[in-house]
Length: 283
Image (tube, rainbow, N blue to C red):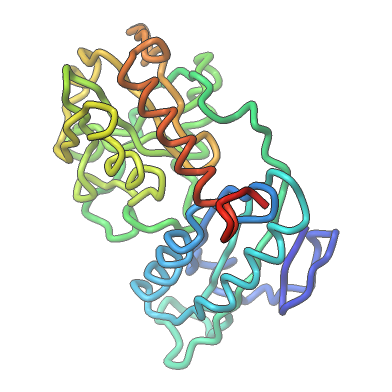
């Protein structure tokens, strides 16, 4: 399904100006959200991040229109992945942004299997470095070629996801999510300054840590320290929490870790609550 200019279409093909800077330069931001039974999980957080990302790039996005697009698509299925994209729009040839941007907003929806959530996976450590010195490392932009190449590496090695370190060798993130390690009663995730996207589920997990008996920390992690953790997991809006069963040759019992089980249960409740209606029930 496609939402464009206030209209829904079952086809995802539409006229598009080939000089749009989102297409030619990646001058855009996007967001991926989970919708359940007609409602978007953590809707406000997704809208706020998309609008803030566009503002960082220097063009405005109307949060009301984003909400309209997301909700229109959410009503077209039971469990959906909704991708909302905002580009700067067209402009003259060259890198310099136009003085008066003409943003373009569109969104698509596709089925998202419940089998994707909370399912263990393995990680492959790529030698491609995450550039923590770039502001773009903390934005969700279409510039995903490093992740595409790393995903091919991971697949060739028999793994589901790639693990990125930054230019200083510190653990940064996975190709499509944030990373956490459990060390005793400490829940550790790399700080945003290490080239990390401020994930929506990342923030939820940090907020829920205390209820799971964990003390949250945002600090840099060397790869050997992460490999020595009791449990490792990935978070994103569709997988929610994915226990890591292996990083390369190092194996983990993450899925059986009691604190991670408590955290997963708490997150599942938060997702359900965020998709509930005014009466507290799901749509």
